[in-house]
Amino acid sequence: MPETLLFGIPLWQLEVSCFDTIADLRTFPAADNPNWTQRAIAQVFGQATVFDGQFLWYSWDPTSALADDGVSTIKPTQISGSGRWRLSAGFGSSFATALGS
Image (cartoon, rainbow, N blue to C red; front, top):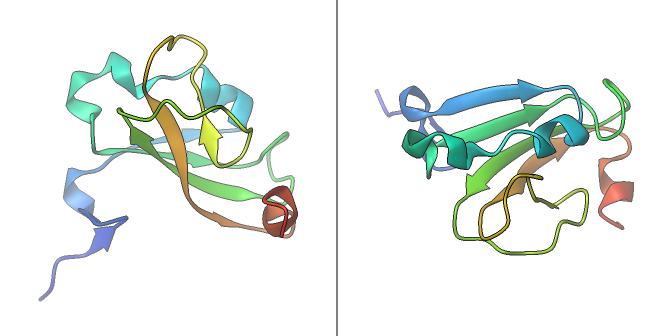
């Protein structure tokens, strides 16, 4: 049977954390856990409030220094250098609007 992958990573290797909103995600840098470098996945239940129409998945990119745009790239507040949560997938009525589509 073929191995199940999520974002190119075998499911059994993932470290998944859940957050109510993007603001909550900003308070949690995966860099605090050295085992997470390429395996951290974050599930966010709403952009501004829980169940506000967006359901977002982020993966940790330890090398990214992109600016925080509030949707596709999230910079943890404790990070001063590289390391960003990068949008991997999103679902919901306001997802396309948030991305400017």
